[in-house]
Image 1 (cartoon, rainbow, N blue to C red):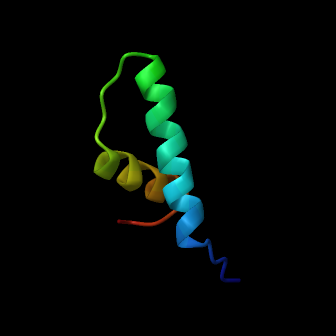
Image 2 (spheres, rainbow, N blue to C red):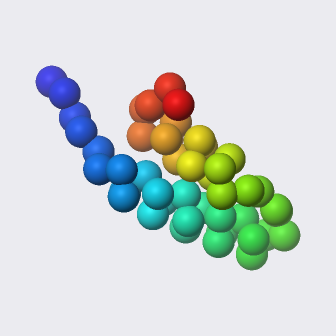
Length: 45
């Protein structure tokens, strides 16, 4: 079974992650958040 996840969902997750980390005083660049969000959804990169 192949599951496809829209690109906008990964980007939206990265934005939300970045906002949460900012509230915790953790400065992480958007590119790193995209990478992390993609891995959460099962992508290698």
